[in-house]
Image 1 (spheres, protein in one colour):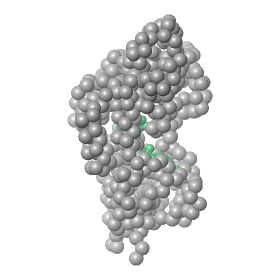
Image 2 (tube, protein in one colour):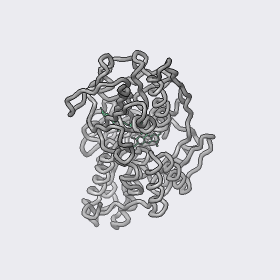
Image 3 (cartoon, rainbow, N blue to C red):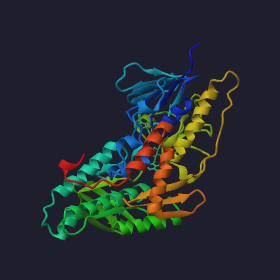
Image 4 (cartoon, rainbow, N blue to C red):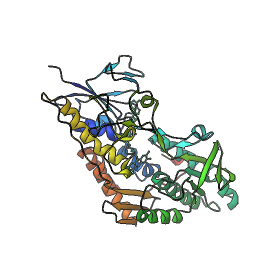
Length: 415
Ligand SMILES: Cc1cc2nc3c(=O)[nH]c(=O)nc-3n(C[C@H](O)[C@H](O)[C@H](O)COP(=O)(O)OP(=O)(O)OC[C@H]3O[C@@H](n4cnc5c(N)ncnc54)[C@H](O)[C@@H]3O)c2cc1C
């Protein structure tokens, strides 16, 4: 008898780990994803700074998955849950399934700010980090050695929008890299890195113990923090923001947007129950309410039984993958399907703050920071990478070859 066909859309934390858990065996698994590699997003900041290499955090799927998991590198463009079919952008033949796992993640949300989508840099993919690093290097390369400190500061103004964990990690990383480059190139003055936040504090979703380390790191990296500040518009070389009714326009070398996530058109088009934010409403088994054979997890799904701080995190997507795999298998058992549910708790937080420091919040609520936290983060993340084989290779590389940042060298010398 033919094995049930399981199609997984998306190869991020939710999709890849579901595919790894399902493996082969009782079901026929196809993973459809528009990239050729997985991305361990929590370390994209370290990739920007050269503390880690692409192969550490973005291994090709071919190195991770067993050969009997079929892989299609393509973009899913429509889903028809009634006909049980997915159409793809390049592959003309639609894909039919018996069970579908939706795990396509979200996209950057520019919340309608004028010029933001066209002119800011997103920071979600390897290529985004490459573009940002290139922009920092090119900006440095254009600065003549005798430029005055005020002009150096003006030319080297970078704004990061959003002071969530992502904005704080990114701005401290950029500031440390730029400060180091200014010294190495014997330029006068300092770079200017700003983080702009609508709310009244940085890392609003996190508790006070870890916030203290984040605030200290922002100060030590000389990042200017602008809270209660709304971005009004972004152009190719400026940002306009408003604070307490006063508008200011700043010349910028670039603006990086980390402020929020929204749903992709693929999910927006899907005519099923959703929350006010457009997330797919799912049961505690990860199934859509109207379709027993469609599971949704990760950033696109509103899971009813998880600690609120877990929403939109890799932690949740990764933990849900195990549940998804078990429930997909249960769907095809001969007897009545026994679907599982699970409550997910926060496992702790680990932030990278600049090139020298980190901050770790343990599941028990204790926090610590500094160089030790940076090392602890590397150790922790070694254990979260996919597959034992990959973990061992990366762990050995970090242990024996080190994790020092790669300075921003002139473009010809960058690799
Ligand atoms: C820079 C950054 C740092 C982060 N740091 C942390 C952190 O420290 N801790 C934490 O818990 N969370 C962190 N997150 C959040 C975390 O990455 C997400 O919550 C997590 O990736 C969600 O997993 P997912 O599988 O739902 O989506 P994703 O990981 O986004 O994966 C979706 C996959 O689907 C593919 N895809 C999308 N559309 C299609 C399509 N139409 N057809 C085929 N394939 C498609 C995408 O290319 C991608 O491979 C971070 C996010 C970013 C961007």
